[in-house]
Image 1 (cartoon, helix red, strand yellow):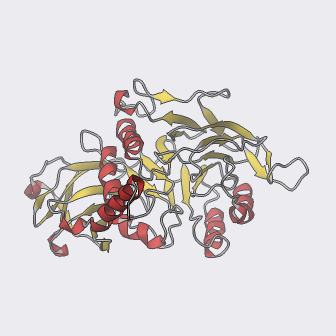
Image 2 (spheres, one colour; image 1 turned 180 degrees about the vertical axis):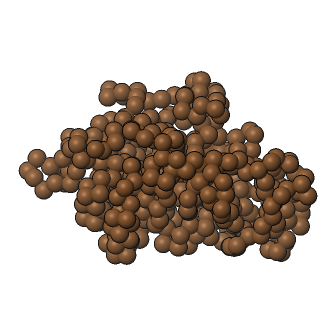
Image 3 (spheres, helix red, strand yellow; image 1 turned 45 degrees about the horizontal axis):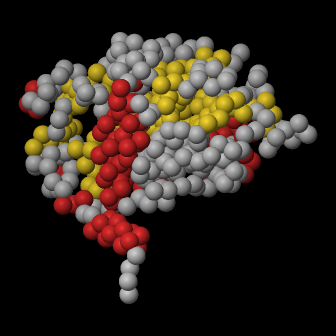
Length: 421
């Protein structure tokens, strides 16, 4: 039987993927990532791959003073609290608690192979009047060149956190996850500064436990994190699990318990009303979440999945004859929806705008969000020129660095959401 070239290429890729064995890698701890699960002013989750050897050989050293890789000089030591082995990717995790707010912490990790590089992070302020910078986007999939460019921009912009909206890989194979974790190291600044991430499950993460094992998220992959005591609460929701059950009960109860928070964000993967025609409507999200967003004053929702770009005017759910796909523009009480995920995944057409759509496009991008006490400013950052973008001034992370490519559509480059009365 004569095999055509297309079949041979597919067969080669299948065999390459099938034979990939992360357990064959070895060396000092690597593939680091930071996650937020609790108060960003006093806690931090650190994860890494330890490759080979016994779990008990992993030791974590940290301090408020930079000692480089001199492990004996570090004042504090800890051991991992959670281990996982997902498709032979061996990960260890530790959650540091009772940290000082707005403080730099330097750390290294040791295993039987040696000492890691020295990294550091800074806890956030616990003051509701100090602004924060957030990068938000999703759908990196397996286009490594644009994915790496977006990651590099994270390192250069030095946000306080990244909201990642899911679909990290396409098939979730060991090789794809290994490459994703390798590429994520590009988010680390040249001085070793790391940015924590709030991870969301996408439709290409086939099970909740993938994110639990690789990022130590909550088992159900829905949770809330409050920044600056009462400045902002971010709700990470799971559009791939039961929407109308325990998740919605939790969301309602948590929104009720945090009514005093100044701003509220939600992040989930599949959009309620996709802005590309080949995606299904988010019927359950609309039914169960949209009324809660309206009732409790959700300010901003970040969606992914469609691989194009959109932002809306403030909108509210409505059954009136003027509503389009269940929404009407509501500048006073509405919610702004942005997205829809272009961190490197194959782009789709922006061919389904609504009457309440503010801007629409199709290019690789993420959102750069600045949260102040009285307003939110949102900019859409094009990522294709990442190599020539300058690094932001660490003392002023709200002023754009040189050559940053900010999208400037008809309605302007900055989308502002003012604080509610």
